[in-house]
Length: 167
Image (cartoon, rainbow, N blue to C red):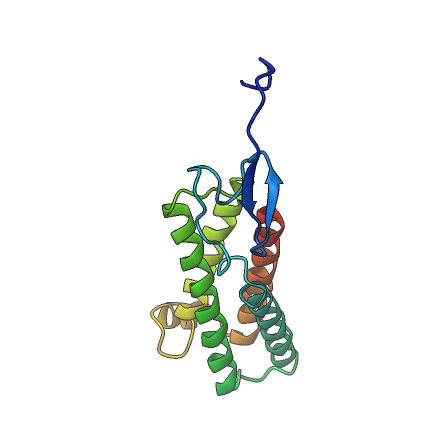
């Protein structure tokens, strides 16, 4: 509204995702909807972005290879899956803290992709040996490796798309 009335907007210092400040008017991005900075350094941390991406892509290729060879998944696959899920949980938690603190992403789709990533992580966790989805799943599907390859590849795509909508 102020732009249409030609009212000058004051310059403010804004915190960028890398922690640097810049001069300029606030846009509709993380950290500037309440007028005070909500630290987003953890949510925009490079390791928290790339580790789940690389981890899920690695898990998708491993599960795809085991599906091609028609073999069951090894036990270390589930350990790596739990590690990737733990990093994702930290990323989702950091995003929820930002959201609760008044920060908003550039696009609302970022929150939707975050919710889909969290739901897919719950499915990955539930399909581990002894998981809550395992009994139901084992009655229907016989190729565990193929299913996990598709789930990990879907998770990779959701994380990548969420990252694209958040930058």
